[in-house]
Amino acid sequence: MIFEMRCYVLKTGTSEAFMQAQHDRGFELVRPALERLVGFFQGMTGEAEEVVHLYRYDDLNDWMARLQSTCGVAALEPYFRTVREIARSQESSFLLAAPDAVLSPHWNASSDWLPAQGAIGPLHDAWPLGGGLLIEFTRYQLAPGHLAHFWPLLHDLEQSVDASARGVLIGHFSSWIGPLHNVYCLRMFRSAAQQQASRAAFRRSAAWEAFTRQAAPMLQRQHSRWMRPFSIPQLSPWLAGPG
Image: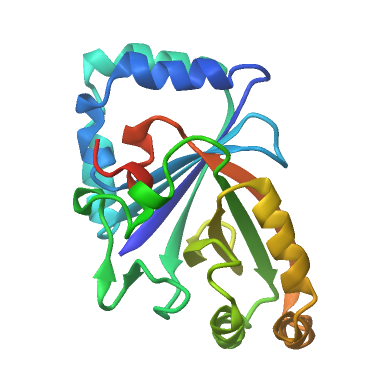
């Protein structure tokens, strides 16, 4: 399996127009893509007016077939024109799930979540879409040649995490096509207050101290930002189930 992370930076003040365009287009014409969608996320910190899409595909052939299914569809042209007019930039990267079920609980040798399965685990009832839900989106930029040594450090760190205090882990991913030597972690919290309290406690822990000491020689940069899931159920199937 592979993942596509598609990032749009929109023109200032056009986030609502982008969301309205999703409603106006409807969802049936893009059903092939929605069958592989993890979720749409909207930036809260970092780049202003940013939207990130995360998809899970079987392979590049699956990605190409589903992408081409929208090409030349006349009914989709108004949507494409609208998005092209308000988008300042668009980038796509392909990722691989971490090779460890602790770090990738939903995509591994024994689990492969897709929207048709419904919301991930108990999220539909326990984590209702909307409100103050927050995604902590962390990127570790590694020096070349260190990825294989970095995974065990993340594994040990994750094993030390008190799950009740650290929100819900969506997964860890590594870059495959696009900017290389990057590891991404997506984790969800009920609110900014929970994330801040969790971060403060975690940064005081012995596990974090050990991780930073061992990871420091491998890391070029570490970046964290906040995002929120789209409130449109069809675009957040990991929380709301299939649209």
